[in-house]
Image 1 (spheres, one colour):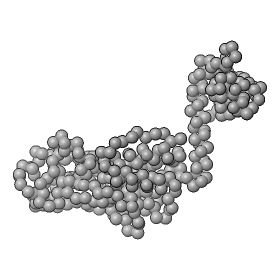
Image 2 (cartoon, one colour):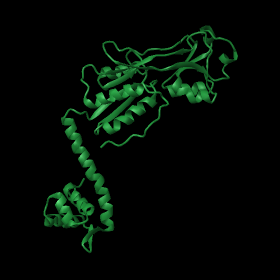
Image 3 (tube, rainbow, N blue to C red):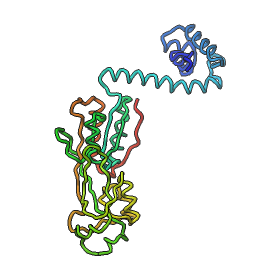
Image 4 (spheres, rainbow, N blue to C red):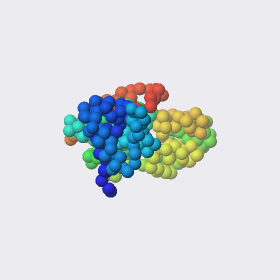
Length: 308
C-alpha cells in the first residue's frame, strides 16, 4: 500500500481554513502564521494534483473536488483522534476488548439494553459476545477466553452477581396429542411422546437439563430450532417464556397442563474470571447488566449513541 502524501496536520489545516472562513482566521485559531497556513494548503494541492480552494473576493471557497475531499477528511481526522484516545485509555488500564459469554436462554432484550447503554461509555472498547448452552458457558470462562459469563449453572469456586430468573414452560402445538387428552398430564403421559431438547454446548462434561423420560428424544443445537420444531407440531419441549411469547399469542404454542413441573425458573448469575481483575470497562458493563436485568423486559428502549 502506498504511503499517504498528505498528513493529518494538513487536513486539519484545510478544515480550519474552511470552518473559519479564511487563511488569517485559520492562522489565528491554529496559532500559526498566515504564510505557514497558505503554504500548507498550496503544498496539499500540489501533492494531491487537484485544486481544493478558490478565492472568492476575500474568502476562501471550496472547489467541487475540495468539498468531497474535505468531507472524507473529517472522518479521517476524527478516527485518528479516537485512535489516540484509545491508546491513552489503554495506558490508563482501560481494556481494548471485553469478552462476554452468555447462556442462550438468557433474554437477549436485556443484553441489548445493557450494551446500548455501554456504547457511549466504552471509550472505543469493543465487546466480543458469544452464546453457549449450559456447561458450554462455564468451559469458555475456565479456558480464559471470556472475561464475563452469564450462566444458570452454579460455578464451583466462583462468586457471582445474582441476576433474575427465566421461566421455562412445557409447551406443544395446540393440535398435539397431549393437548387432546383434555386433562391434567402426568410424566407417564409424556413417556410415549417425542421430547425436543437442546444440546449442551460443553465438550468435557455436557449435562442434560429438564425431564428426559420420553422414549423418543430429538436433540437440537439451539433454542430457536427447538421452538420451530415444536411450533410445527413435532414433539414438546421446555422453552423460555420470553422466547415463545409471539408463538403463544398467535396460538401456535400452548403450555401443557402438567400436574407438576409444567414450568421451572432457573436463576442466572453473572460471573467474572477469578484469576483476572476487572478493568474499568468490564466493571461498567457488569453494572449495566445488573441494572438492566432488574428492569422489566418491556421497558422502553433508547437507541444507542456513538461513543466519543
